[in-house]
Image (tube, rainbow over all chains, first blue to last red):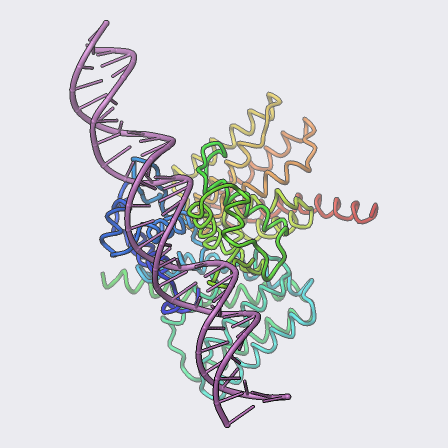
Length: 239
Length: 239
DNA sequence: TTACCCATATTGTAATATAATATTTTTTTA
DNA sequence: TAAAAAAATATTATATTACAATATGGGTAA
């Protein structure tokens, strides 16, 4: 979807409406204004409004029927694995509890992906993991940002799993990581520790040690989980 | 999306184009006819065509730009967790290899979901699992179809996990199960065996034994995996 | 009271026109 | 002749208007 400036009219409206829906501006059940009202509200033609409505419907956020209008679908029908929907969710409520659910998903997916990568990963795909890993090392030593290569490391493993459903979750995982970063401190010596832990995963994959790769990855994510659960406990105390 | 008869024009066109795209009718990179051509081809107005195009774009299948036309996005950008996209995939290529990828995903998700259900599942959610389980038992004893309650059993566990991202995968899991059913024989005595294995998972969840629930679920899916791998080996031999 | 029918509001579909955009061709100029 | 500029062209993007289909609610008649 590129940058916001590049979006056309209906895409911009899709964005605004999508955010509003997820933020709960329009009540569950039957909410949204009629197409005509949206036209005047945004000062655009019905064509653009309808295209936005169709896109949101395709993402499971709304449904529209003649005479009845446009209504918000119940949240369990929202397509959470759609990148836009995911982004809107975190713009509206970047809560620790959602982050915990993210980590539970990562804990399900990534260790398995690492195991598959160890078993069936092509040499090129594994080389790609190493590239990201070296960039992490480099960033840790030169005090640069470790975020980008970190995301690339995890994405490369998903690709190396050879399973398209795992790789499809790359945006999901990236979003989870980006949100996690907001809560981590990044003391300078800990950066190298993180890079070292990632290297262990890489080594296991490269050596074809599926179980070991799986366990290392689970350990890594579990650490993040423990940290977040601590934060949640803290915030509950202060509340 | 309900039944096909209930769909409106643009939704029907979305379906047809979606299927065609995934079946590979239009070459990768730049393929589709122009909007004008689609209008005459289907005998409909540009409005309907455009709405279909927007919906497919929202699902990541295509993108369109002025002067350049409509082009098929690379498959790794397709939103595979969209129910429609998933359905189209299996209509076009119900292969054993895709089914194996499905099972790899289930092996990642469902054991974790069962563990979470054991840890945090609400009594109502767990009761729902039992309802499905009893229906399975019933079907096994009266020689009925075990499919529907089987799907409900797995869905109920995803719900009981309390993680919206897991529950969101219910359609994905259902599809995987439905495809699996096409390859299984269902000897009458084996039905009761299957139901019993499911009961073990339920018992573990109900007793709060997270590790046990996880292992039981993993065992169940692993059995299916072994069966599919056998089938794959067979088909490779005959080829 | 019940059944039927009609008015009405809202989305669904169509047709047409103009704008924006990017490719290709042509023309101009050095 | 080659390169740059400009014009023609094809295609999607947006707007406008009109009518059709549909379901809701109210009113009318039996």
